[in-house]
Amino acid sequence: MQVRRMLVLLLIILKEAGPTAAHSCRCSSSSCSCGRRGLSSVPQDLPTTITTLYLWVNEITTLSQSDFSRYGSLRTLHLYSNQISTINHGTFVGLSNLKRLYLSVNQLANLTADMFDGLGNLEVLQLDNNQLTSLPSDIFEGLGNLRGLRLDQNQLSSLPTGIFAGLGNLEELRLSHLTSLAADTFEGLGNLLTLVLNQIQLSKLPAGIFEGLGNLWQLDLSQNPLTNLTADTDIFEGLGNLTTLYLSYNQLTSLPVGIFEGLGNLQTLILSQNQLTSLPAGIFEGLGNLQILFLSQNQLTNLPIRIFEGLGNLVDLNLSHNRLTSLPAAIFDGLDHLLLLHLDHNQLTSLSADIFPVLASVLIWVQIRNNPLQCDCKMRPFKLLMTGEHYFESGIYCAGPANLAGKNLLFGDLISGSTNFYHPTCTNLYPSTCTNLYPPTYTSFYPQTCSKLQHLLEEVRHQKVLEKGFL
Image (cartoon, rainbow, N blue to C red):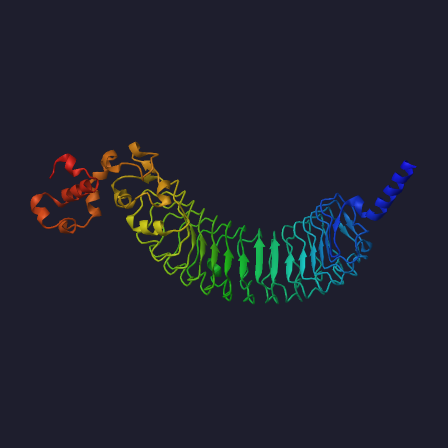
């Protein structure tokens, strides 16, 4: 009797749990989460009222019309990270309410022209990270409400003419690995806000490629083999609303004057990982709203004196991993809002006292390590300004002379430790008139040359005058 009762109770539990318990999807009246369940097909026993279905990271290989016929209220469908290679005709018919469809990271090699029939309300379509080699020219016909489209990380080498026709509401488009790109590819996409063109196999962009994209905010041209923009000085013409421009990981060796003309709203400019050896004077003229400028990992050996003039809103400047041997005096003048400054991994042998106030004013981070700084007399004016109150001071290490190699400049005793500190060239670091250093009465008290008075001044500053018995 007790065994019978237990069997009845078990049947009741199984009935209440239903088939859903077998795949352990977590469901509410509006959504079901079936991710990472090892599913090979779409469960057919979920609440029919759901508007969101998560089927990501499963083992589904094929999709058919019957898979979603019960779920006509779906607005969001997550199918990414499965093994889908086949989507049969009419799979999405009946999903007229669907707004977001995620098919990323699957094994799709081709799509039929009628694949997305009936999805007129679709706003987001992600097909990235598949194995697509070509697309039908009318694959997106009827998707006039589409706002986001990802086709990147596939094996597409070209796009059919007019493939984006009718997608006038598109705001974000991501492409990659193309070997050809027609000048009119983006015609009619006037509402585009974000355009990503990564890993395209083009050394030069077609003239007028961005014509008509006046609303563009973000343009990503990184990780391409672009070698030169000289012939395309008007390539960014008409992009006056652009706020972010990525040109990193290319092969640019130079930038023509005027290349950024008209980009007055630009806030972020990334030029890292190129082969730039120099920058023309005035290259950043007119970019007064720029906040982030990355020039790291190039081959820059020097900078024009007023290269950053007019960039008063800059908060993050990265010059690391270049070959800079010196920084012109006043190079950072006017950069009063810097939060981050990267100067590490260059070939700087000396730091001018003129840049000390700028370094001291940077609010968050100054990185200056890994430079072959020579802590000789040329570094004396900079050293005299160091107090230990600024965190960047602890990151300044000497590469020479030999007795100071590896020592921190802040704690190194340059006067007693470096014979180079009194090299004749040091006399040029101070005003030539001794009265600028001492009251006139001192010149008669110590009538030697001005250089010796300067020498004495340094002794006074280091409280060594009394030890030597000069007074």
